[in-house]
Length: 197
Image (cartoon, rainbow, N blue to C red):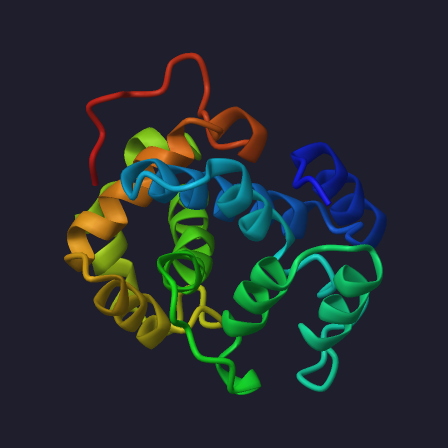
């Protein structure tokens, strides 16, 4: 089976009705593509893994079902083991180890992409331009903010990928800026580019 983004997007939209979950998939895809470029790897493959990592979550949100149901669906639809294994490995509780750079990158980008999005949404212009590593690190200390995001996964993800946490955060912010419009985080026409709170 040829890995094509269009097919992956169709699969995502078939199973995921939630706009926020679709945006999360796009955010993780953008980070994964950026890391694929950095590691001279297959951008399509890494991008599809990012796009599909939670495609079953809207329909099967329980720990018993996600990502197991998704894995079964991907297998039925002819997706290769490499993609299915990476997706299985992003959930700690599956027991699937993260051995490849792609698997480590997915884990490192998943929670962080969601957290960066949450930080951008509370900025005055709701813009990624207003977000930097310092503001993300500051919000990470606030346990009440985006409380569903596992801070340990963000820290451990960067460590297992072998990148400095601040660099990892900045890298993902830059990746997300490339799709800011699709994420609804491009800010208004008068967004203050110098605002780095």
